[in-house]
Image 1 (cartoon, rainbow, N blue to C red):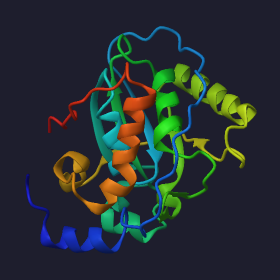
Image 2: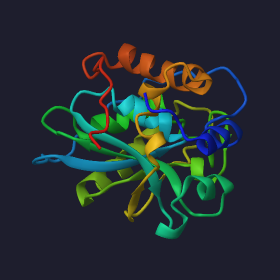
Image 3: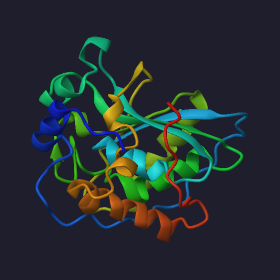
Length: 225
């Protein structure tokens, strides 16, 4: 395991993904989404759901996902830097770019997993202990078909009334995705005993295993880069 740079250690201890210890949120068994029209070949989609360590961690345990990269989406290249993101005002959201094989896992199934075990769609500009617009929950479809499915599913979740508050997750237009610094990639696999991982993100992976056992992959998919 590569040691984090000294500055990175200090930053992680004082800012993002290091909120106060609280009880982890309970998973929700979200309804089955409408199926997407047949997709050919590997596809990509971007998900923003709070601290990207956990979003990446969950999708890295999903069969059919061939890559899960933590990064920044929504702002400019000049502000796609961790210290600027966490200071606020960049328009970026901490996000994960997921590449997947639709012959194994479809986009509608990824949506269901996301809202069941990753993100609470009723929290505005926050997830878990982390607060700020860079922690907003958002879906970023990369094709018109994905957008149709995402829109329909958000409406379906609102109608299902699984949460006591209204759905605030939004669909955002595709912009440039900027990969995060290398020490953020595969963070859960590199730092399994990190306090934040144990409190907030390990329970999400355990919920994935319980609720979606047929989609669960025991081995963490590491970034090839």
